[in-house]
Image (cartoon, rainbow over all chains, first blue to last red):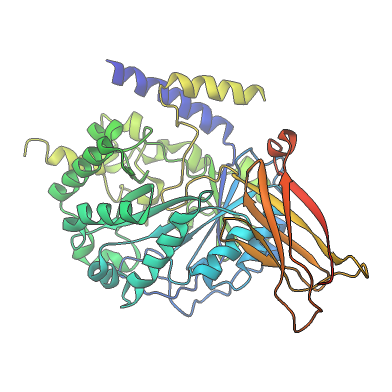
Length: 354
Length: 128
């Protein structure tokens, strides 16, 4: 009864948030170059990208269209690997000059002591670094023998900062699935306070590789692992906001599932496209900073993000949980968009009585 | 402002205090602004000219920056009420030697609670 009441109230909150769609979080895909060649990359990034890095001035012109940025408005630099941009500190400082904050998602390979200091000096406020297993499985997924050694240094440095809001993310797959407890212990020893777990989206390079994807039983075990870990309180473990997980909703996250793509989250992609999270199908683009006023697009477009009734199709059409889920994460709608790519809730239901 | 209150009330009723603290699935946690911008200029007390290559650091922290050709420096440090900023000449090949200096700064409440807290320091160093 209490759960149902909480869900109903949350739906009211979600409706309010959707109606007002305050921009809190802006991804900037500042490069699509990458120094790794990960097996699970959803962007198919590579060392030599088809696109040149977006000039900082082009991005700033778009940023300057934002009228009265919200209190905690943050620009999230992503890629590719953002640290491949040599003037990343300048990018950060220009964002801070505008009264905004900035953060970064990195694979950690280039994050050494010198970089740690220069990024803090430039006002970096939050950071996410990926680790995808213990040494062997991490290096396997990252396709690089030195990757773990380098990310280990990066994690130690980032965790030592008292002011960075720092977390580690892990893409759970068949290889690292059995290592989760050991990874957890490793992160606690490194001083990491927050750990977010994902599953891999079947797009990009990952989609043809069965080793990337957990079985339904393993997925339930993952939910149990997160749920149990959260009771231990020594590290803040959570499942990412990638999808609705039915019976586990209150057990694996701090808040109910709410895909805020296009509601509070926007993006400026490498070619100037205006969208939401960078892993969303690029055909959902709402405009382009080279032709449109960014903030005007944010204020007046994004209809498909803010009215998700079009997702009530395929397996979502008859789903009893649709009102709480609304078609799962937006990034699970690709191609023809006739059916959701992954339904976490369905995976869990399949294993309910096992 | 009115909308913020409404948002907080509705979010609060959801019995989930973190309704407003979110991160995109492939993004970072939110930055809660736990820093303070310290910038300034270092000059020679004797000549009044800017000094390049002075190492500016924060006591008991790893961060440091060097002054540029205009003697200027800029770094975001932990948002604390007191900070000991240290100035050290590490560039003896280009300058004469200057004495080190420690400056204890106290940040008043109104600066600390402002949206973009910052302090500006004018520093003069004496010849050794």
